[in-house]
Length: 418
Image (cartoon, rainbow, N blue to C red; front, side):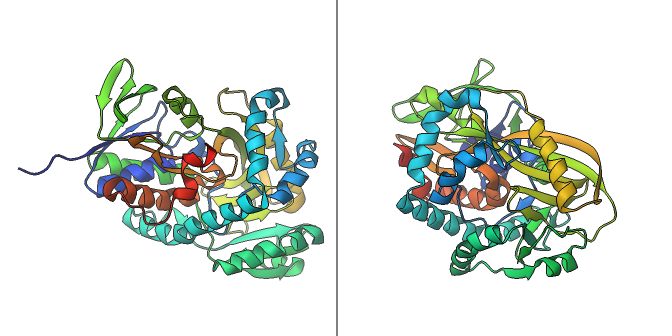
């Protein structure tokens, strides 16, 4: 008689939770996913679709901290804050300021570059294993600059990227327009990242993985979690809808709601809901076949099966209170596309707001929960959930199955905020 299959409950069916569920299933574990919503319909639904493996600079560094007051006071800028929530957000901002110290920022860049160094190959492996070839496009990506100042102030970043093996190609504004004729004369510089990839529909990626998970015997419970119950240093049960289920291991991967789940267990999780918006628009025939990031404006333009997706802007909000969307933040994107690529976009076909889970140092939380050896954490990926989903699944799969992750994940442990 064979050994009993280890059972795992994963709370959260976004791209991180679904990818991890599938990875653990492939390693012989019986997995149940929990979410009060349908898989992939929350934050994973509306991202920019960009697999941004060159993004190794967390927003927690001195340059951003110094410019934060000016950015927050600009209603059309890439960063905004719900000022009525400032008292609730103040503890997070204080931790953010601490994370912006030179030493902490350098450590965070190294940690993010390390995991990003594995993200590209993890995506290739994942794409093949899950048969996602029709949903993933490898045409590179472009970052555009409307000012000499913006281009020059990022030159050191490109040097650091080269140090970590990230290739790039610098273009003049005219050379960029040769690649994408729709770009306006505002564009003075551009950088191409040849290894960049994007997906043509983020929701379809999550549901394709989820469907294979269920098809191969995985379980999904569409329920709101009432509590995680513990005893003697172990998680004993997940309680939902008045009933309890027992698992050998439990993973919290519930995005910005993770802190609410963990608070009754005594964990203080400094997480905010970094609200992002997107617009989708129909468009004229175009050669645009890669994501384009607008540096000064803080948003991305991605060609998708449903049209052009304009995604970006940051609006800091409390993770403990669900407020109504501020659709003015989405309307900004329509103005941006009209100035960057005049006459390309036509009619708005949809709009969306999602709540990115963001920690003060802009690094995810990965690893064991301190003090509970069979509780694991995988959340807080802010803008990089899609990018880091396969590598997170691989790392956490190794940790849960063998006890040893493939890279050092101590920089991502929740203990760093103790």
